[in-house]
Length: 93
Length: 281
Image (cartoon, rainbow over all chains, first blue to last red; front, side, top):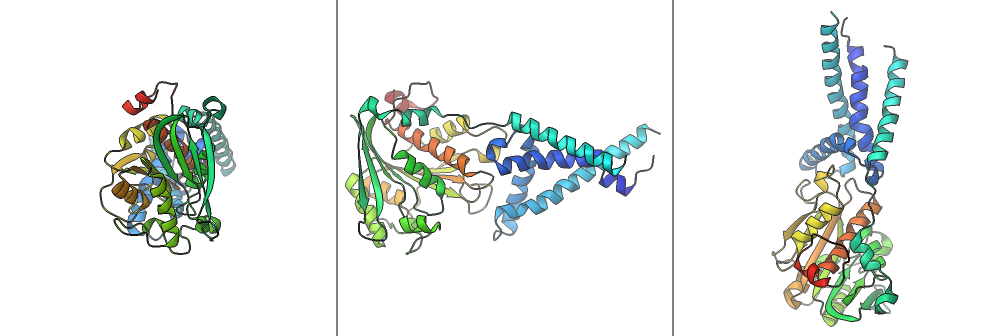
């Protein structure tokens, strides 16, 4: 099986990881009572990202960091998707 | 795997996560301290009065004084020193209907009335919480009117309710989820109690911290501590990731705990709070 860029960018592992990082955290952002343990990974990424972003550019409001958060989560998801596809390719040879 | 399969799998996964997250999420339950503070007035027969501060001016604002039947300290609570910090305004307005078991509760819910009406941090003369220099007359008419009331009630405890944009220690210059207090206050106990009872373990950045505040600055709670010897607290929650009802829940819980810590509430449930609460039981 060949690992293609298209497959890595939209593999089930990539999509699943992205949704796992963003959806539970997004629910908690909309309504605090909907924060759950599932939101913890996204919560930590957003908290650390906003702390770094605020130190670099304190003039921005903290909701602005949703943009790099979503991009960063997709980057992490692509890494997970790549590892998943590579592992799958090795074991199906 | 084609795109449709990936999309449908992703949709199903997202729906599953929404369901699990909703089921696992924490509903901010009824707080025993708040319940005690709201308990029926008919049981203790407290007296309440409302007066107007700065009457006949654009700053005119109500002050509520609730006298409990038993002797005890006077606690003075301020909301709305900054007009866009709704948690303090909402909760201080609620507190006008609270029923302490002992002492006197004095509440000014909309301290900077013009700023509250304009939904802005500052009122006509700028930031009200920078108008109370130590050992000098307050700078503006509004600040002088507020300080006259503080001197008249001579509170043993002052609680000033605020909201920041970020989190203390995480975001530079922001002070959310922090309790600033005088050395004789119960800041650590207050933070511990809030963290144990209200802040979920999976929101670690939102755990409250307590900090002794000893630097001189022209803040109302500092002036009360410096000139009247009041035990003083400045409470800050945050707008970061928290909706209005949660900010209010944290603020309400903090206010009720301050009353309990200083003997104004008789608690019927076991708590982890310290000796003053034990005395108050």
